[in-house]
Image 1: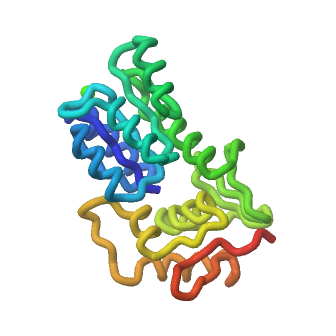
Image 2 (image 1 turned 180 degrees about the vertical axis):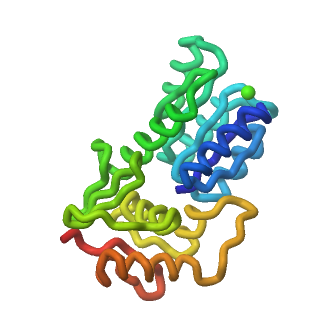
Length: 220
Ligand code: CA
């Protein structure tokens, strides 16, 4: 899961990025509204954490532009003031949720999980696909009730497929969701993670769509 973090406060931004990385999100961090707009145009994100008070272009303008383009990207806004007018303007401009500073990192993570879950079409805390159950909060996977041990990256690839059910995911899309700017992407890593997932979950769990990429197999 790749997150765009837009926050101009260096200390806070650094803290949020560190916290999200610990939870195995790939995080791109920008600190003004223009950079945010460019990043949103250039990259595919799973969610955006957006401060409202920003240099160059405020968060509300970034958000409105995003929605005008028809994007359904889950957006969680951060507001410094406990002002209901800010929250209302944010929600009316297309934000999915908000947090008032100062906030608890654990709460930010929980709210992000909820946004990502709903974006994946699931209102329940666990994601179910046939006999497979993925619990994003506990970071656990079971298959037919038996725990499956996955590395952080394997878990991330699996969660990407479950969040984009019925879609073909290209290798580039999977890499985008796995790696933030500046992180090394080995040449065969996505294939390696898929190979491991097939070994652990069954050969048909992820299908190869020749010439296009990969797709979640049918639920069993
Ligand atoms: Ca700010």
